[in-house]
Length: 422
Image (tube, rainbow, N blue to C red; front, side, top):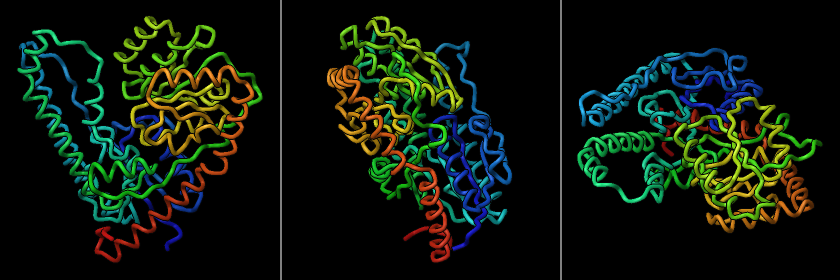
Protein backbone atom coordinates (compact mmCIF):
# COMPACT_ATOMS: atom_id res chain seq x y z
CA UNK A 1 0.00 0.00 0.00
CA UNK A 2 1.13 3.54 -0.72
CA UNK A 3 2.12 5.26 2.52
CA UNK A 4 1.61 8.89 1.49
CA UNK A 5 -1.61 9.41 -0.43
CA UNK A 6 -2.68 12.49 -2.32
CA UNK A 7 -6.33 12.70 -1.29
CA UNK A 8 -8.99 14.89 -2.89
CA UNK A 9 -11.60 15.70 -0.25
CA UNK A 10 -14.97 16.84 -1.63
CA UNK A 11 -17.91 18.09 0.42
CA UNK A 12 -20.81 20.52 0.49
CA UNK A 13 -21.63 20.50 4.19
CA UNK A 14 -23.00 23.03 6.67
CA UNK A 15 -21.73 23.29 10.24
CA UNK A 16 -22.63 20.36 12.45
CA UNK A 17 -21.61 16.78 13.21
CA UNK A 18 -20.72 15.73 9.66
CA UNK A 19 -18.59 18.85 9.18
CA UNK A 20 -16.86 18.16 12.50
CA UNK A 21 -16.23 14.58 11.39
CA UNK A 22 -14.41 15.51 8.18
CA UNK A 23 -12.26 17.96 10.16
CA UNK A 24 -11.23 15.29 12.65
CA UNK A 25 -10.77 12.64 9.94
CA UNK A 26 -8.60 15.06 7.95
CA UNK A 27 -6.51 15.85 11.02
CA UNK A 28 -5.93 12.13 11.56
CA UNK A 29 -5.06 11.44 7.91
CA UNK A 30 -2.59 14.34 7.80
CA UNK A 31 -0.96 13.10 11.03
CA UNK A 32 -0.41 9.77 9.25
CA UNK A 33 1.50 11.48 6.45
CA UNK A 34 -1.19 11.89 3.80
CA UNK A 35 -1.79 15.11 1.86
CA UNK A 36 -5.35 16.34 1.55
CA UNK A 37 -6.70 18.96 -0.87
CA UNK A 38 -10.16 20.31 -0.05
CA UNK A 39 -12.71 20.73 -2.84
CA UNK A 40 -16.05 22.27 -1.90
CA UNK A 41 -18.94 24.27 -3.24
CA UNK A 42 -19.35 27.90 -2.23
CA UNK A 43 -22.51 26.87 -0.36
CA UNK A 44 -20.46 24.74 2.09
CA UNK A 45 -19.52 26.11 5.49
CA UNK A 46 -15.88 27.23 5.49
CA UNK A 47 -15.58 28.96 8.88
CA UNK A 48 -16.69 26.18 11.25
CA UNK A 49 -13.54 24.16 12.00
CA UNK A 50 -11.65 25.64 9.05
CA UNK A 51 -9.15 23.18 7.56
CA UNK A 52 -6.72 25.64 5.95
CA UNK A 53 -3.92 24.67 8.37
CA UNK A 54 -4.41 20.95 7.64
CA UNK A 55 -4.80 20.78 3.86
CA UNK A 56 -2.33 21.40 1.05
CA UNK A 57 -4.87 23.66 -0.63
CA UNK A 58 -8.51 24.35 -1.29
CA UNK A 59 -10.57 24.80 -4.43
CA UNK A 60 -14.00 26.42 -4.20
CA UNK A 61 -16.56 26.04 -6.97
CA UNK A 62 -19.18 28.83 -7.10
CA UNK A 63 -22.76 27.65 -6.83
CA UNK A 64 -25.90 29.67 -6.17
CA UNK A 65 -29.09 28.45 -4.50
CA UNK A 66 -32.14 30.21 -5.99
CA UNK A 67 -34.15 32.63 -3.91
CA UNK A 68 -37.76 31.58 -3.52
CA UNK A 69 -40.08 34.57 -3.51
CA UNK A 70 -43.80 35.12 -3.75
CA UNK A 71 -44.75 36.32 -7.21
CA UNK A 72 -47.36 39.03 -7.81
CA UNK A 73 -49.43 36.62 -9.93
CA UNK A 74 -51.63 34.51 -7.57
CA UNK A 75 -51.28 30.75 -7.92
CA UNK A 76 -48.06 30.81 -9.94
CA UNK A 77 -45.50 30.73 -7.10
CA UNK A 78 -45.43 26.93 -6.48
CA UNK A 79 -44.94 26.26 -10.19
CA UNK A 80 -42.14 28.83 -10.46
CA UNK A 81 -40.42 27.52 -7.31
CA UNK A 82 -40.65 23.93 -8.52
CA UNK A 83 -38.98 24.92 -11.76
CA UNK A 84 -36.25 26.79 -9.85
CA UNK A 85 -35.54 23.67 -7.79
CA UNK A 86 -35.35 21.41 -10.84
CA UNK A 87 -33.11 23.92 -12.61
CA UNK A 88 -30.87 24.07 -9.52
CA UNK A 89 -30.45 20.29 -9.48
CA UNK A 90 -29.64 20.26 -13.19
CA UNK A 91 -27.05 22.97 -12.61
CA UNK A 92 -25.59 20.99 -9.71
CA UNK A 93 -25.41 17.90 -11.91
CA UNK A 94 -23.55 19.78 -14.66
CA UNK A 95 -21.17 21.39 -12.17
CA UNK A 96 -20.45 17.99 -10.60
CA UNK A 97 -19.46 16.62 -14.01
CA UNK A 98 -17.01 19.51 -14.38
CA UNK A 99 -15.62 19.01 -10.86
CA UNK A 100 -15.08 15.29 -11.51
CA UNK A 101 -13.18 16.05 -14.70
CA UNK A 102 -11.09 18.68 -12.90
CA UNK A 103 -10.17 16.26 -10.10
CA UNK A 104 -9.48 13.39 -12.49
CA UNK A 105 -6.88 15.50 -14.31
CA UNK A 106 -5.02 16.41 -11.09
CA UNK A 107 -3.58 12.91 -10.54
CA UNK A 108 -4.89 12.32 -7.05
CA UNK A 109 -4.52 8.80 -5.69
CA UNK A 110 -8.05 8.70 -4.32
CA UNK A 111 -11.10 10.92 -3.80
CA UNK A 112 -12.89 11.07 -0.47
CA UNK A 113 -16.43 12.19 -1.32
CA UNK A 114 -18.81 13.40 1.40
CA UNK A 115 -22.45 14.44 1.57
CA UNK A 116 -24.00 17.38 -0.26
CA UNK A 117 -26.42 19.49 1.76
CA UNK A 118 -28.49 20.11 -1.38
CA UNK A 119 -28.79 16.65 -2.92
CA UNK A 120 -27.59 14.61 0.12
CA UNK A 121 -26.07 11.95 -2.14
CA UNK A 122 -23.63 13.89 -4.37
CA UNK A 123 -23.81 13.86 -8.16
CA UNK A 124 -20.02 13.67 -8.20
CA UNK A 125 -20.01 9.87 -7.81
CA UNK A 126 -21.63 9.54 -11.24
CA UNK A 127 -18.63 10.96 -13.07
CA UNK A 128 -15.38 10.29 -11.18
CA UNK A 129 -12.80 8.07 -12.86
CA UNK A 130 -10.30 8.39 -10.01
CA UNK A 131 -10.74 5.73 -7.30
CA UNK A 132 -13.02 7.04 -4.56
CA UNK A 133 -15.01 6.27 -1.46
CA UNK A 134 -18.29 7.97 -0.59
CA UNK A 135 -18.69 8.64 3.12
CA UNK A 136 -22.45 8.94 3.65
CA UNK A 137 -22.89 10.70 6.99
CA UNK A 138 -26.68 10.44 6.74
CA UNK A 139 -26.99 6.82 5.69
CA UNK A 140 -30.09 5.86 3.74
CA UNK A 141 -32.52 8.33 5.28
CA UNK A 142 -33.58 10.25 2.20
CA UNK A 143 -35.57 13.48 1.99
CA UNK A 144 -39.05 12.00 1.60
CA UNK A 145 -38.70 10.03 4.83
CA UNK A 146 -38.41 13.20 6.91
CA UNK A 147 -40.90 15.17 4.84
CA UNK A 148 -43.54 12.56 5.61
CA UNK A 149 -42.78 12.60 9.32
CA UNK A 150 -43.15 16.35 9.54
CA UNK A 151 -46.82 16.07 8.60
CA UNK A 152 -47.73 13.49 11.27
CA UNK A 153 -49.91 14.93 14.00
CA UNK A 154 -48.62 18.47 13.69
CA UNK A 155 -51.66 20.14 12.20
CA UNK A 156 -55.38 19.89 12.70
CA UNK A 157 -57.97 19.28 9.96
CA UNK A 158 -57.39 21.38 6.85
CA UNK A 159 -59.76 24.17 5.96
CA UNK A 160 -61.63 24.21 2.65
CA UNK A 161 -59.20 26.80 1.27
CA UNK A 162 -56.20 24.71 2.33
CA UNK A 163 -57.70 21.62 0.69
CA UNK A 164 -58.33 23.58 -2.52
CA UNK A 165 -54.75 24.89 -2.56
CA UNK A 166 -53.44 21.38 -1.95
CA UNK A 167 -55.37 20.08 -4.95
CA UNK A 168 -54.36 22.96 -7.21
CA UNK A 169 -50.69 22.79 -6.28
CA UNK A 170 -50.48 19.01 -6.16
CA UNK A 171 -48.77 18.68 -9.55
CA UNK A 172 -45.77 21.02 -9.01
CA UNK A 173 -45.26 19.67 -5.48
CA UNK A 174 -45.21 16.05 -6.64
CA UNK A 175 -43.02 16.77 -9.66
CA UNK A 176 -40.47 18.63 -7.55
CA UNK A 177 -40.26 15.94 -4.86
CA UNK A 178 -40.12 13.10 -7.35
CA UNK A 179 -37.32 14.82 -9.24
CA UNK A 180 -35.30 15.31 -6.04
CA UNK A 181 -35.89 11.76 -4.82
CA UNK A 182 -35.13 10.25 -8.21
CA UNK A 183 -31.76 11.97 -8.34
CA UNK A 184 -30.85 11.09 -4.77
CA UNK A 185 -31.64 7.43 -5.35
CA UNK A 186 -29.74 7.44 -8.66
CA UNK A 187 -26.69 9.05 -7.03
CA UNK A 188 -26.80 6.65 -4.08
CA UNK A 189 -26.90 3.63 -6.37
CA UNK A 190 -24.07 4.94 -8.55
CA UNK A 191 -21.80 5.07 -5.50
CA UNK A 192 -19.75 1.89 -5.77
CA UNK A 193 -17.78 2.17 -2.52
CA UNK A 194 -19.88 3.48 0.38
CA UNK A 195 -18.76 4.08 3.96
CA UNK A 196 -20.97 5.38 6.75
CA UNK A 197 -20.81 6.09 10.47
CA UNK A 198 -22.94 3.39 12.14
CA UNK A 199 -24.36 -0.07 11.59
CA UNK A 200 -27.83 1.46 11.54
CA UNK A 201 -26.83 3.91 8.80
CA UNK A 202 -25.25 1.10 6.77
CA UNK A 203 -28.37 -1.04 7.10
CA UNK A 204 -30.66 1.83 6.12
CA UNK A 205 -28.47 2.63 3.10
CA UNK A 206 -28.80 -0.98 1.98
CA UNK A 207 -32.54 -0.96 2.70
CA UNK A 208 -33.24 2.22 0.72
CA UNK A 209 -30.77 1.83 -2.13
CA UNK A 210 -29.74 -1.83 -2.31
CA UNK A 211 -26.04 -0.95 -1.94
CA UNK A 212 -23.97 -2.41 0.94
CA UNK A 213 -21.99 0.07 3.03
CA UNK A 214 -18.96 -0.33 5.26
CA UNK A 215 -18.83 1.23 8.74
CA UNK A 216 -16.23 3.71 9.99
CA UNK A 217 -17.41 5.13 13.30
CA UNK A 218 -16.79 8.67 14.48
CA UNK A 219 -14.64 9.45 17.51
CA UNK A 220 -14.38 12.07 20.23
CA UNK A 221 -11.86 14.87 20.66
CA UNK A 222 -10.80 14.00 24.20
CA UNK A 223 -8.62 17.09 24.53
CA UNK A 224 -11.71 19.30 24.28
CA UNK A 225 -14.57 17.12 25.46
CA UNK A 226 -13.51 15.87 28.87
CA UNK A 227 -14.81 15.84 32.47
CA UNK A 228 -14.52 18.88 34.70
CA UNK A 229 -14.36 19.38 38.47
CA UNK A 230 -16.81 22.30 38.30
CA UNK A 231 -20.22 21.90 39.89
CA UNK A 232 -23.16 20.84 37.78
CA UNK A 233 -25.70 23.47 36.81
CA UNK A 234 -29.44 23.27 37.28
CA UNK A 235 -30.40 22.36 33.73
CA UNK A 236 -30.70 19.47 31.32
CA UNK A 237 -29.16 19.71 27.87
CA UNK A 238 -29.66 18.76 24.25
CA UNK A 239 -27.61 19.69 21.17
CA UNK A 240 -28.49 19.78 17.49
CA UNK A 241 -29.80 21.87 14.62
CA UNK A 242 -33.09 23.53 15.57
CA UNK A 243 -35.24 21.69 13.04
CA UNK A 244 -38.25 19.42 13.39
CA UNK A 245 -36.55 16.04 13.01
CA UNK A 246 -34.18 16.66 15.93
CA UNK A 247 -37.07 15.87 18.25
CA UNK A 248 -37.09 18.90 20.55
CA UNK A 249 -40.90 18.93 20.66
CA UNK A 250 -40.79 15.45 22.15
CA UNK A 251 -38.43 16.61 24.90
CA UNK A 252 -40.79 19.43 25.86
CA UNK A 253 -43.64 16.91 26.09
CA UNK A 254 -41.55 14.64 28.31
CA UNK A 255 -40.42 17.46 30.62
CA UNK A 256 -44.00 18.65 31.01
CA UNK A 257 -44.85 15.33 32.66
CA UNK A 258 -42.31 15.77 35.46
CA UNK A 259 -43.32 17.11 38.88
CA UNK A 260 -42.40 20.82 39.17
CA UNK A 261 -39.43 20.10 41.47
CA UNK A 262 -37.79 17.94 38.77
CA UNK A 263 -38.75 20.07 35.78
CA UNK A 264 -35.36 21.66 35.15
CA UNK A 265 -34.84 24.17 32.33
CA UNK A 266 -33.96 22.62 28.98
CA UNK A 267 -30.91 24.19 27.36
CA UNK A 268 -30.85 23.71 23.56
CA UNK A 269 -27.53 24.38 21.82
CA UNK A 270 -27.93 24.67 18.07
CA UNK A 271 -25.57 25.24 15.16
CA UNK A 272 -28.56 26.25 13.01
CA UNK A 273 -31.91 27.78 14.02
CA UNK A 274 -35.03 27.50 11.89
CA UNK A 275 -37.11 30.56 12.92
CA UNK A 276 -40.42 28.73 12.39
CA UNK A 277 -39.31 25.79 14.53
CA UNK A 278 -38.10 28.16 17.25
CA UNK A 279 -41.46 29.89 17.25
CA UNK A 280 -43.20 26.52 17.57
CA UNK A 281 -40.93 25.40 20.43
CA UNK A 282 -41.40 28.67 22.31
CA UNK A 283 -45.17 28.26 22.03
CA UNK A 284 -45.17 24.60 23.12
CA UNK A 285 -42.84 25.32 26.03
CA UNK A 286 -45.04 28.15 27.26
CA UNK A 287 -48.15 25.96 27.05
CA UNK A 288 -46.41 23.09 28.85
CA UNK A 289 -44.81 25.36 31.48
CA UNK A 290 -41.34 24.17 30.52
CA UNK A 291 -38.44 26.62 30.49
CA UNK A 292 -36.23 26.44 27.42
CA UNK A 293 -33.05 28.34 26.65
CA UNK A 294 -32.03 28.26 22.97
CA UNK A 295 -28.49 29.33 22.09
CA UNK A 296 -26.49 29.23 18.88
CA UNK A 297 -22.90 28.29 19.69
CA UNK A 298 -19.96 27.35 17.45
CA UNK A 299 -17.04 27.49 19.90
CA UNK A 300 -15.96 24.01 21.04
CA UNK A 301 -14.51 25.11 24.38
CA UNK A 302 -17.74 26.88 25.30
CA UNK A 303 -19.77 23.88 24.16
CA UNK A 304 -17.63 21.53 26.26
CA UNK A 305 -18.25 23.63 29.37
CA UNK A 306 -22.00 23.42 28.79
CA UNK A 307 -21.78 19.62 28.44
CA UNK A 308 -19.73 19.44 31.65
CA UNK A 309 -22.23 21.40 33.73
CA UNK A 310 -25.42 19.72 32.53
CA UNK A 311 -27.19 17.35 34.93
CA UNK A 312 -28.29 15.01 32.15
CA UNK A 313 -28.03 15.03 28.36
CA UNK A 314 -31.28 14.34 26.49
CA UNK A 315 -31.46 13.05 22.92
CA UNK A 316 -34.54 12.29 20.83
CA UNK A 317 -34.01 13.00 17.11
CA UNK A 318 -36.01 10.90 14.67
CA UNK A 319 -33.97 7.94 13.38
CA UNK A 320 -30.63 9.73 13.77
CA UNK A 321 -27.97 7.89 11.72
CA UNK A 322 -25.30 8.28 14.41
CA UNK A 323 -25.40 10.92 17.14
CA UNK A 324 -22.13 12.74 17.80
CA UNK A 325 -23.50 15.01 20.55
CA UNK A 326 -24.43 12.20 23.01
CA UNK A 327 -20.93 10.81 22.48
CA UNK A 328 -19.43 14.20 23.37
CA UNK A 329 -21.70 14.43 26.41
CA UNK A 330 -20.52 11.03 27.65
CA UNK A 331 -16.89 12.08 27.14
CA UNK A 332 -17.62 15.04 29.44
CA UNK A 333 -18.97 12.71 32.13
CA UNK A 334 -22.64 13.55 31.56
CA UNK A 335 -25.09 10.60 31.46
CA UNK A 336 -27.41 10.36 28.46
CA UNK A 337 -31.07 9.50 28.07
CA UNK A 338 -31.84 8.75 24.43
CA UNK A 339 -34.73 7.39 22.41
CA UNK A 340 -34.00 3.76 21.58
CA UNK A 341 -33.73 4.02 17.81
CA UNK A 342 -31.14 4.68 15.12
CA UNK A 343 -27.48 5.29 15.83
CA UNK A 344 -27.74 6.19 19.56
CA UNK A 345 -28.38 2.51 20.30
CA UNK A 346 -24.74 1.91 19.33
CA UNK A 347 -23.46 4.68 21.62
CA UNK A 348 -25.43 4.56 24.87
CA UNK A 349 -25.15 1.40 26.97
CA UNK A 350 -28.53 1.08 28.67
CA UNK A 351 -28.23 1.11 32.45
CA UNK A 352 -24.47 1.75 32.31
CA UNK A 353 -23.81 5.12 30.65
CA UNK A 354 -27.45 6.24 30.62
CA UNK A 355 -30.83 4.97 29.51
CA UNK A 356 -32.29 3.96 26.16
CA UNK A 357 -36.08 4.28 26.21
CA UNK A 358 -39.02 4.00 23.85
CA UNK A 359 -40.35 7.09 22.07
CA UNK A 360 -42.91 7.64 24.81
CA UNK A 361 -42.87 10.95 26.72
CA UNK A 362 -44.02 9.30 29.95
CA UNK A 363 -41.32 6.62 29.83
CA UNK A 364 -38.68 9.21 28.94
CA UNK A 365 -39.83 11.41 31.84
CA UNK A 366 -39.59 8.52 34.32
CA UNK A 367 -36.02 7.76 33.26
CA UNK A 368 -35.08 11.42 33.66
CA UNK A 369 -36.73 11.63 37.07
CA UNK A 370 -34.78 8.57 38.22
CA UNK A 371 -31.48 10.17 37.28
CA UNK A 372 -32.30 13.60 38.67
CA UNK A 373 -33.20 12.20 42.09
CA UNK A 374 -30.15 9.92 42.32
CA UNK A 375 -26.85 11.81 42.45
CA UNK A 376 -24.79 8.64 42.92
CA UNK A 377 -26.29 6.96 39.85
CA UNK A 378 -25.63 10.05 37.72
CA UNK A 379 -22.00 10.12 38.85
CA UNK A 380 -21.51 6.40 38.19
CA UNK A 381 -23.03 6.61 34.73
CA UNK A 382 -20.99 9.73 33.95
CA UNK A 383 -17.77 7.99 34.97
CA UNK A 384 -18.71 4.95 32.90
CA UNK A 385 -19.29 7.22 29.92
CA UNK A 386 -15.82 8.76 30.19
CA UNK A 387 -14.20 5.32 30.40
CA UNK A 388 -16.25 3.97 27.50
CA UNK A 389 -15.49 6.85 25.13
CA UNK A 390 -11.76 6.60 25.81
CA UNK A 391 -11.67 2.87 25.14
CA UNK A 392 -14.01 2.71 22.14
CA UNK A 393 -14.41 6.12 20.48
CA UNK A 394 -11.23 7.84 19.38
CA UNK A 395 -10.56 9.88 16.24
CA UNK A 396 -7.12 8.31 15.81
CA UNK A 397 -8.73 4.87 15.52
CA UNK A 398 -11.40 6.32 13.22
CA UNK A 399 -8.82 7.92 10.90
CA UNK A 400 -6.86 4.67 10.73
CA UNK A 401 -10.00 2.84 9.68
CA UNK A 402 -10.85 5.47 7.04
CA UNK A 403 -7.27 5.26 5.75
CA UNK A 404 -7.68 1.51 5.23
CA UNK A 405 -10.79 2.05 3.10
CA UNK A 406 -9.07 4.70 0.99
CA UNK A 407 -6.20 2.29 0.35
CA UNK A 408 -8.65 -0.56 -0.33
CA UNK A 409 -10.54 1.54 -2.89
CA UNK A 410 -7.30 2.09 -4.79
CA UNK A 411 -6.50 -1.63 -4.74
CA UNK A 412 -9.95 -2.55 -6.03
CA UNK A 413 -9.78 -0.01 -8.83
CA UNK A 414 -6.54 -1.52 -10.08
CA UNK A 415 -8.24 -4.88 -10.33
CA UNK A 416 -11.41 -3.69 -12.04
CA UNK A 417 -10.48 -0.83 -14.39
CA UNK A 418 -11.49 1.95 -11.94
CA UNK A 419 -14.88 0.39 -11.19
CA UNK A 420 -15.03 -0.55 -7.51
CA UNK A 421 -17.00 -3.74 -7.84
CA UNK A 422 -16.06 -6.67 -5.64
